[in-house]
Image (cartoon, rainbow, N blue to C red):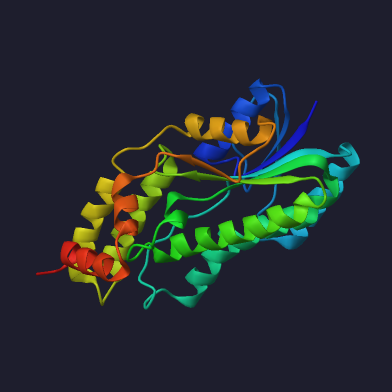
Length: 265
């Protein structure tokens, strides 16, 4: 039976991934930060992806139980919304610490359990593939950084016979949409420079996120990345046509169009 480690198993997408992989016969280890409802066939491991010593401790225990991992699947991540000129430094560091460095830590520490033929799957965002929107820039920047990290990792681990893939979803029917709503509400209350633009941006985000897919559909993309004989680097799902259209415009036109859409006048 193949062993798979899944980070973010306490979230909607991570939980769906764990459930589907367990049903397909994998031996699943779900990483959580706190206790959660059990899943048949899934053993939970507790650590925070920002805690290097905690990750090392769990690795030491797990390496005594199993001798290899077939895959590491990353679904852990956080969403934030802020203006890049106002965001507190600690918030900026925190989102990078989780969305980028968290994956780096887990891959580095658990790498000795990977064998030739093993796979790493990271969850990105459709925002990584398009030009950043105002106020979601920090989230998009972390996901773009994650993809550059993932591609470099793919190049390196290819030399060891391991595959690296990215799942790039659009809006998903998970708690992240609620987080997005809360982030917008928080931004509208805290911004001093853009309070007159925030409501229009709220409307823009709602139109982008109006079409969402179930976490189970995203989980099946993870299955493809794990079971395809020759896995792709990018697996897209639910890309938004408005974001793609904006990104295809020349830079000057993008700024002008978004400026008009979000103008306080």
